[in-house]
Image 1 (tube, rainbow, N blue to C red):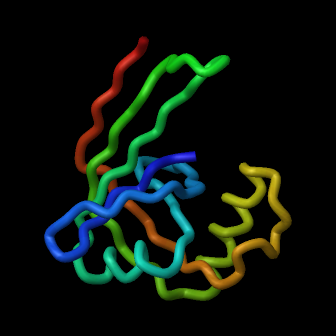
Image 2 (image 1 turned 180 degrees about the vertical axis):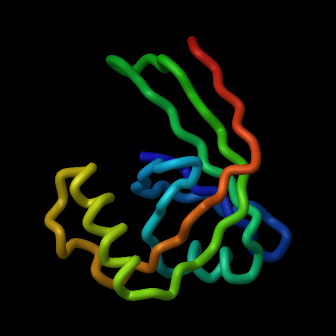
Length: 111
């Protein structure tokens, strides 16, 4: 799971999301406030951390530009890929829309 940071009314809005990284871009399928925020301001962040027995092993923070992909076929394919990663049914979250994040910078730390 990742924490997806968007902006609303000049303030940060952070929420957990399922994601998939592929070829220098990140795919997220979402709806609601996060999707509306991206449509208004495409500058986003994504924070991912790996834990083992409750202790952080590493973390990465990605800053990038998000694009809402209003294509039903691309969204369905991304949703299948993400649902497969998280062992969810292929039909789960059918109302979500694809957001593709082009990564501008990344920071990484091992613990």
